[in-house]
Length: 289
Image 1 (tube, one colour):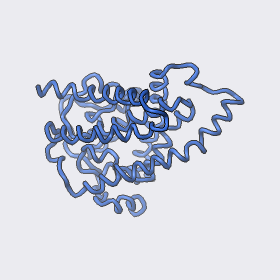
Image 2 (spheres, rainbow, N blue to C red):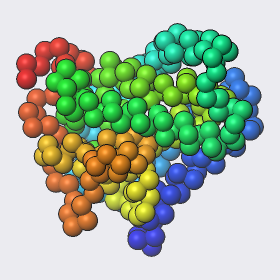
Image 3 (cartoon, one colour):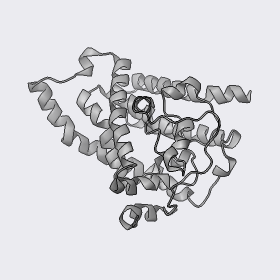
């Protein structure tokens, strides 16, 4: 039974995310769309918490520890606010100029040429491309690493530190990931599907559950990859840069998933990121390394 749960857990939640979101899109008016990802996260959080207690990858990563308060504030206050700010700014930076170009020059219009699923896949793959290179840059450019180190400073990987990012980085990530959405101009139902998938898979990358994704590890960025991305060994952590998908890591040679061992310690080499929320906000401006 345990083995069945291990292999069924990830595909079940992926299918549930797509199915529930699709059903709610068809059931409710467009004005209610923003509440769909929020509802999913609330529902799935209960599943994540239960799963971490019943089938943990590392039992010592569970529980209310010194970082829990900051992780909660990062994931459920800072991240939504920064994402919303990016959502507000993005139309002025990209959408309106592209709309003008669409009318006068002609650009790719997913709405006219492709169905719902094809629109989701095309926009997601394009968004992943932009995210991949931005994420990779945060590991190579010192200024961006100061922001990104807040995420990697975690000494454990579990569901609630999925949103442990500096406010400024979340804003930049939002711009990078959703630029293709503005470019392709998909319908609102496509956009909300991508937001829902991105939100739930973000938690699935971090959950402290000993599941197995199997062949899906070569399509999606799962916790099996992402734990290696959090390794405190630099050459191991400079891999697996994808957000929802892992395909660009496969293409550009940064895919890393050893079959004969599991990650031991996570965190940064410097190990100097504060545990408290305010300290994490200050870190990129006070860190001297």
